[in-house]
Image (cartoon, rainbow, N blue to C red; front, side, top):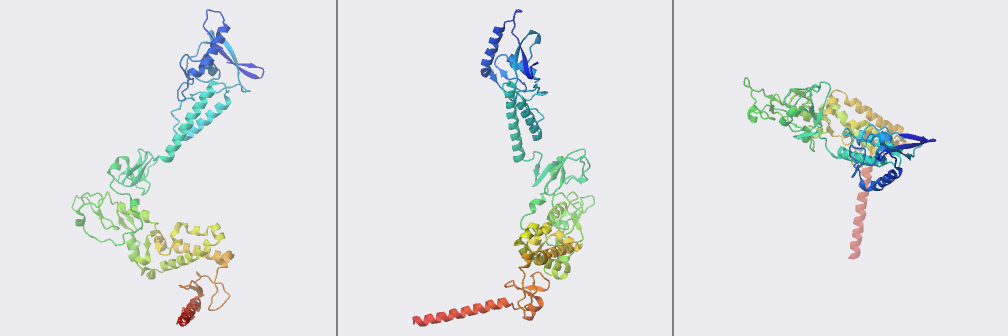
Length: 494
């Protein structure tokens, strides 16, 4: 109950002492004082208890119980009847009537607080209640203990989220499978049983590395190593074109699952993988078609051919990996494919432009090199290619992109940026005032000293660099002077 005294709220607490019908206020005050003195000794708080009242060795304090009742805090302790009580007034601190309106137990951890977000919301609620509760109120001490418990639980959940591995993740043959659920049909097939993965009626797993799918019941039957585990440095492909070597070389067994295969009627049909050349059963070879790197490099052949599941997964992961060094594998291909030769020339010039950008603050701020972020290897070397590069080149999509990027880089160096333009060269042979750059089509770069000349000027002097000639003359002069000094010293010593 609440009583008001002027503008300040006053809590009226019912307090009673059994008697034979007579009111004995002195005995009541004495009992209340004894309860207050023994409260600190008998109190045993339990922040995770379902009861809103503290546990006491003896009978619970009638003052605390009635105060919590007046504050509208639910309690599991049996309340005494209002008909057998006296009244005791306690003045409260808040300027407005205090009503916590607590409809659930805030002193025990709710079972549904499994998520970190829910616990954070509950912590905020408890903090608001603490600010509204008077300092002398026993409920405030209980709220603080509850807050400590919630914060401990929050710390545990944060540690579990930061350090623990997903409990639903499973590792099989290098695969890192994670549980997936879908409300629609996935359109995928299990790698083991080849059946459709129905996402609506069941759960399934997918590998985070090679992205294969598998039923939960089929995980233990998987025998294929994850294709990502084969991506070891240096990256490489099988560079030999597939040849028919016969089933006898595999003892008439599938290369992957070792089940029997044969061309006999009624036997399991063998299927050859055009990438590895081995034979597989229909469960391991789904007649997927992929471009074969060996046929591209040696024959410039981009016709897709049938491969097994393991080869397809490996080729997909390697599709954007710079693993093809064309000059080493087939140096004659550059002369045969003009587009490839043009791309190589543009890449070499881009590497020359890169030296200007690394020392130009404007280029670094504008991040010009990010134009090649999808082909990072283009700004690292001019030799390695990916299957994606070659596929784009044969479909006439790569060369226009590289030409536009090359033009953007050249425009910055020769027109937009005064700093880069000031690092140009003058031809020492013709002595013209024209500024030239090593990546210009009409210019050539000396291999010894990296000086730049016009192509026709350099051809006139039979590719003899004037700077290199001066260096040679200085070296010869220094050697001649050193020889004269040695002769003089020998003459003086004799």
